[in-house]
Image 1: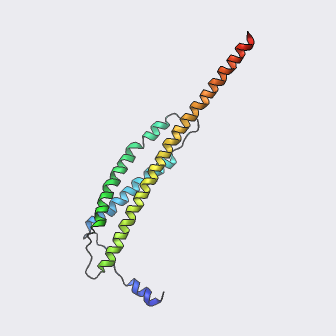
Image 2: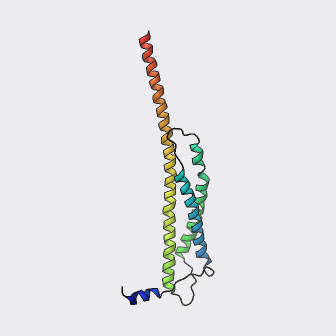
Image 3: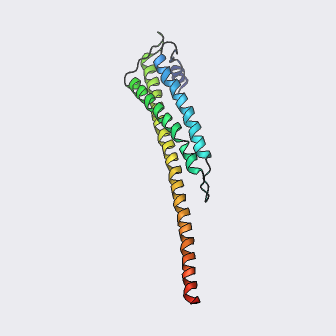
Length: 166
């Protein structure tokens, strides 16, 4: 790339005024809020310690995530509908000396990337939560199997003892 091409690229001026584009910045600000909620919940999910054998109170710890996850999903659905509607019918107001076509392409591409990123993140957090639930259920089944095995061994030993004592 020559220096003429670089200077030509740098000449493009695309900026969006927050005052003149409240719809776009409302979507942008809500994206930031949803991502903050997502980060908080996902961090708590990752920090949740899964006990190996003693599963007391683990189910209640998992239930504590139900309401925040539902709230996050509700916020995401509202945001997604708003962002998708704006993406299909963008309404930008540019300053007179800015390049409108390039600005529309740039900011709709940013919005499309935000939508895709948040969709992927919602799948990730749902998957993390389901994995924790399945892990808990598997551990409960494992503990039940261990106790059942111990009881059956005790019953077998009592039966054998009863056979030989007679």
